[in-house]
Length: 489
Image (cartoon, helix red, strand yellow):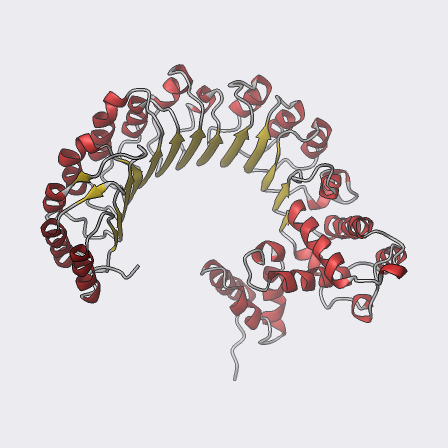
């Protein structure tokens, strides 16, 4: 006798399947077991189908099938409108879908939907040129309008919305940035939790969104080039604290007073902050719950921009990613010190620090204040390598990934043979990858001693790379690959 699992158990099982490498193929198989499994699996499969197919090897064919299914979900009236616009209503399209798949959508991206619709019109709606009464772009527009109407009317739990301007000037996808004005938006967009958009969208669109979507906790704002009052209003009306914030500014202007004022009262509970080109950093100084911090900035900046921020306490910060072309190393050191040992991942990139004399300070700070570090990707100056790298391996004993590079183009080869011998005694036991700077070299004796240390201390093969090798180096590496000390890469 078969056992019927409770729906709650099936949901847990299916969610686990999705979380493991996004295994939608297995989930699709589960939907064929029986009616109960089908009723639970189908909504999950159709939460964000277009997003899941972007990297699929048969993406074109699969995407066209999805659009076909969404057309089948349209009302008879909508299909008549499309037919009058030259969209061929085949017997398949005239049928009603088994489920209203559009109602299950949880993630909508306007550019991806536009591309998919345009693809479908080009591939599945072919008409001899002499019979064409409408240009394809007109049909794409009409089909998009009907699909959007159905999504907004049918979805009662849309969680994630991406609204982006197309790279093409006056693209049709830009015509549908006004989704909050569509009938039914009050229901379908009221529970948005994640919202990604361009900050240069017309203020009136944000003002309308602020009347409907006030449960947003994750914001991704691209192309902030103006101090948008509508955007500020959208931020201000949110009833829940923001948990993640990503802002990309496209101007060297360091202040947006209207937007900054709206952010001040909404960001104290942030756990993730990503900034592409910094502006006033002082407003983020009280974000003591940060767990992830990523900052990219290509222009030189003054000390005052980050001074208050780096002197704040970030005791929960685990991941730090700084791509600052012209940083102050002492400020990075201060920031790391103020995490109090919570960091597990550090990625540092620069071109020319404004205080190169503080490189030793930075490395020693990482060594002393990052006992839980498992991942380090960054620059490592030759002048301090002999002393600090052995100490780095000794103190950061939980290290798993170690990737270091030299930013100086055309720099001379630097011999680290003595360093390799020294670190052979303190190789972190969980080390999985070690990628050394392209301008570093070591002799065969040092390489062999280091790999002997790996054989003694590591339980799994190490992904290892060192440049400037001879045939003798390669023979040693091949020998340790054969002994399963090194991974074959």
